[in-house]
Image 1: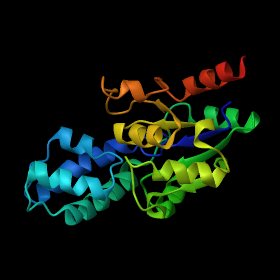
Image 2: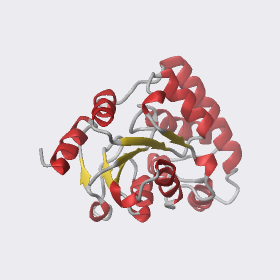
Image 3: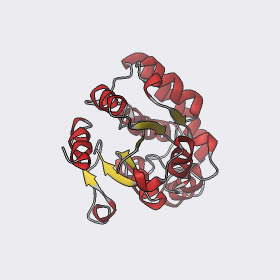
Length: 219
């Protein structure tokens, strides 16, 4: 029985992953590096512990990961200020269904807790979550399972009773490793053949998660 849902944020709740994608490439260019789209896609939701060696291996050992990332954060902030933050389709409807059916919810994001709360408050859904767990509250970020283990623990639930909603491969790996039921809602990429065995399901939008919850209840 599903008792909780753990939500990724960027690219899943918020239509912001496109900003990170573009700004990684632009920031790298400003430092003289030719980052390709597949590099930017590969580091989605990937903690610095894993992203730094990956990008150094791909772009050269002189790639200054933390400086480029700092610039990327500045560019993302500016993009959000200019273009705004929008909810992905189905967010409000799914959260409403969860509230009405006693399914507790948490956010499990690589973004810092403070920024996650700020962004979610900006779009008016922060109060719909029992917990907001940011990447700064754990030792090992995605694809390690830490954030999903912590989010489930914060809700007082076993991970086996939680669906984890993700748009990125690194997030799916983290959720699967934690023992959750990972559902992918693709944003910038579709699941690879290697990723598909880890999925509980793959759905076009968050609207469709309601059907899964109804099915689990036998409706």
